[in-house]
Image (cartoon, rainbow, N blue to C red; front, side, top):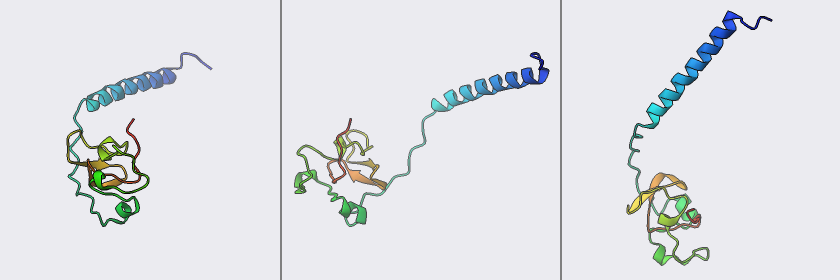
Length: 111
């Protein structure tokens, strides 16, 4: 096999160029702000999943045996709302927002 095969050199040159262009494009895209997500509705208390997870909008009123004092949605690992917001998205309820002062039995301490 010939080590100086022009088709191999052409392929390698194109592969390197493609990788460089892809890297530059990804860097450019990473610098752009992500589009704002659509506003999600508040989680209704009669939602079947909310009921199954004992969701409440006020952690101060929880009587569930799994409740740990001081736990609420704002300090839960699944809560993705910004600090200081009254409501925010939650991975447990992807179609809705939950109260930052709320609680459900899926609560897990934020890392």
